[in-house]
Length: 402
Image (cartoon, rainbow, N blue to C red; front, side, top):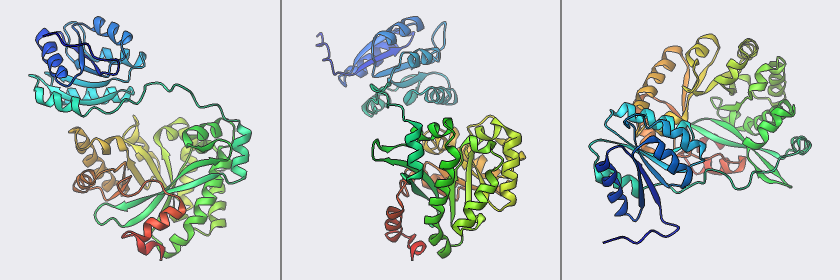
């Protein structure tokens, strides 16, 4: 019996496999879920199809006859595709996971990987749990912001500080918090930092913004620190700040004005910021450490020379990148990397923080791997000062705000 063609809102799937039997198996499985399936036996055919059709799902065999399936990933990105990928291959799990990580790095979404011979029930499970489309391209870009508007916002204290707790994974005891910022603009509404931080960097406002964020957050933090001397406050530094040799003096001035001791402040920097101008960064960071300020290397594990950075520079903390944390339950390589980083941090005498902790199973696995401190939505989202006080009073962290 011929099936009715799907309506305009029906899901579309493309299966790319040089074996006709495999294409048929996938198409029939998709059909049981009401998903219309097209097939492509070659890379050239697949490229032509993804350029013409907005597929919801692409089931991709990594081992095509004359090409490898990885080549299709670039075409999907260039076409602005928002298709969810399912990798199918006779290669081992390490190869399939490497392909999945590459796709994610290219900005593509991955539902999972499957081996061969293909198990239809596992394919159906992935297809039933597909995430909703996000839209590969925004229909309307946010308008540019006038630097003068941002300068006025800094002076008028429209840039607000939010706080995300860092807690011990074992007993959920509060040990510190990271400062995150938002711009509450009367004209633009709530503006996220990915819009105004780059503007501040381009327009020469980043030093003023950084100083204001430090002053505001340290003022709010001081009462907590007085009650709990072990608490720390982490603030992110722009790469541009690590080229300004006046930074240590400015930080010392803000600390003195706030009454918070230098040992309470943790400045977080990314490896990319350090390597952009190593000599200036080493000068600034060493002087900060001499003054008692702590330094954290953020997003550890994503840079090409992270170990060299740890060897050369006076870090006191490292934050393992959330890409390892969020995939540790289903990527078999991620727990191995986390365990290795835990061991490295212990050998170097560094505090280790796992960021991006969102579920209890992840927190439990991190604890078994030796991570002591976590940060993420499982414990709390970024909160206003008032919101954090309220949250603290309702949790085991209540002693921090007595």
